[in-house]
Image 1 (cartoon, rainbow, N blue to C red):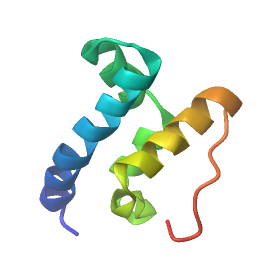
Image 2 (tube, rainbow, N blue to C red):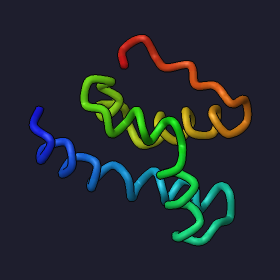
Image 3 (cartoon, rainbow, N blue to C red):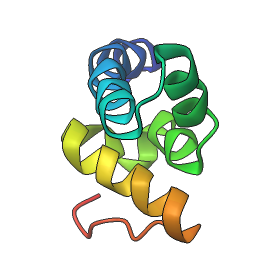
Image 4 (tube, rainbow, N blue to C red):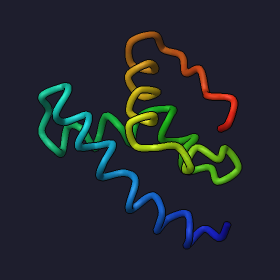
Length: 79
C-alpha cells in the first residue's frame, strides 16, 4: 500500500477511534486526539507493515484502552 493510500485510510479510521475515546473517557476532541496520537498503538497504526489499519475502529479503541490501562498491547493474531 502506498503512503498516500494509508494516509487516506487513516483519515477514515481515526475520527471513529477518537470519537470512541471522547465518548468513553469524557474528553474534548483535542484531548482525545492528543491522547490517541501520542499512543504506541497509533505509532504502530501508522506503520503499514503492522496491518493494524484493517482492524475495526472498535477493536483499535479496545487496544488503545488496553495500552492505557496496562501499558501493553496484545495485538490480535490477524494483525
